[in-house]
Length: 143
Image 1: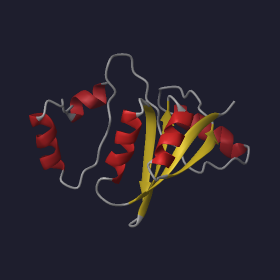
Image 2: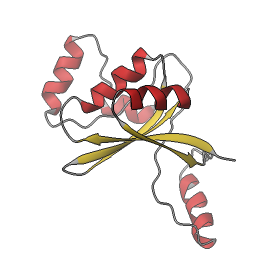
Image 3: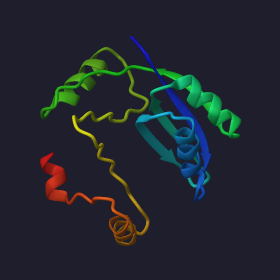
Image 4: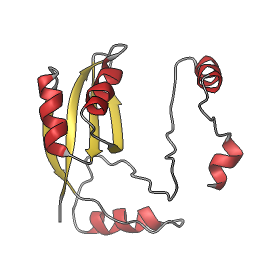
């Protein structure tokens, strides 16, 4: 069984990621999971979305280079060693993992995103001042 992900190639400059999310938001496409890898010049944004065709078409119309790639989504036991069991099985069978990222599912109305900013304190302050709830480490680790 396969799933499809969308890969978007981005210039590594301020505003490009925001432009992708604006285009998807305007099109009514919901991002379910993502991974962003970068170099000094460009990045690759990998997305699992609720409507691949709409996402791909609107991003291409917005001038982005977009590729759809098959991936496998697997349930992993949420316990120490859960991931290792799957990776060990793949290794023993000569399967190489090129990349992976998490799709964390939680019941409730909100998702939790983990960010790294160049100005962490300033970013946290700005978010808080604008009504975005910041989750401290202890609470995050206990979720």
